[in-house]
Length: 610
Image (cartoon, one colour):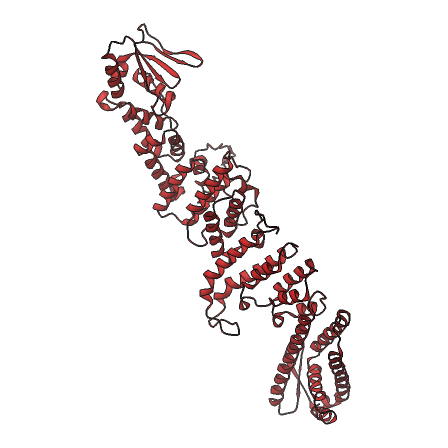
């Protein structure tokens, strides 16, 4: 018996006997010089082909088997089996042999325990082990049509999906961790073996990411059919994308959670077109449930989609997903570089579309707003809106220094946020101030139009102090800031005066309640209070003069930046001093009202009050 294999490197002898070969089988570029009888007794296809060939007058039997699954490598194992040579079945060759045996019709009709029966029994054992099943599934890619017809792929994937959905600690399935032999040493009767690492829910992510995408996609479908948590499916998809799309690794690392793929372990050799197709497929597989995938990861995918010039539908899908959970985004993630032909540094239009989608989704839940901008039933429903308002104010402040950013685009993005979403307007004022500083050529009309985005009544005391001295703001805006600050001061003084009158009515003994350090009030007799009336009157007289001078200054002010800045500083300092002495500020307010009357008579009436 002689089995001789001829390939491009010459002749290679597999086994020998005294009988010459009577059949030659060509598989691709390889030729096998064999004998008919061992082949006829095991293969129905070879029996049929040899009989057809020998029915003619040809002296030499030459057959071609170019379509055999697995090619010459699998056929070499098949002929060894036919000749009774012992072969070793492994997870790497079992699928190819099973498909080749089916192709050659090597059933039990041509001998008990034929190759189909043996490979099927071995595959059942392979499917019971996680690591072997992964290896076998990887080899299915080479013979995919045949493996699918024989349901090898579906059985292997179902086995893997069942193990991934179950608790790994119950069955010790993560073979890559559990099969490692541990070095155990005994010292003084105590074992020094290290405890095995606890297995997390992500133990299978790295293994399945080695599969080709068609097989990985089938695996994801199997997980969905078994009702796996969408969070795990999304995390596995991100791990796969992180491995085969290098752009995902060039961006910042995950802000939260586990980075399931090694940041430097991208093994992609795909072309840009293949990466684009892969990214679009992954985006299509992401679960549609909100908050399943973090906003950070979605924005990473969106950046990669822009660089790879993904389809508009893919980018629109990602923008809508980000918009649905924009309140969870961070400012750094929103700073998407501009990939188009626009001159702006960042992609403002993309953020505009994301914000518009967020508003379309969340505005219907914010109808319980009264005219003053307060929710009718708690503030919980406005929490996402408030967070997005603060996020957009910060984003506007970041993009404001861009000299190519047009005022209209700045206004359009800022005006999307409703007024009630901002507890105060310090953030939008800060963004406007930065924009005015970076665009000094703006006209007063354009500045006033831009400043309409903020409400001067909602500025904090520090913001008002800054705005009152800000030469970049239009004069009309500064006047509004000072007016509302003065109005706020009067309101606070009036409320304090009302509380003081109420307390006096509750003290019929004539004692004055003075505040202690701990916040309580100490009752002071009227006699002690009268002793201090002389000093109080002098202080009130001084405040009257100051208030009157301030009023005259307002009437005589000229519209020049220099004179206005001096007056603003003076007015702010006076307001701060009045806030530090609320009782004296109350009397100053009354005196100012007296001066606005008919002169001396009103002045005397004010003294009577004091």
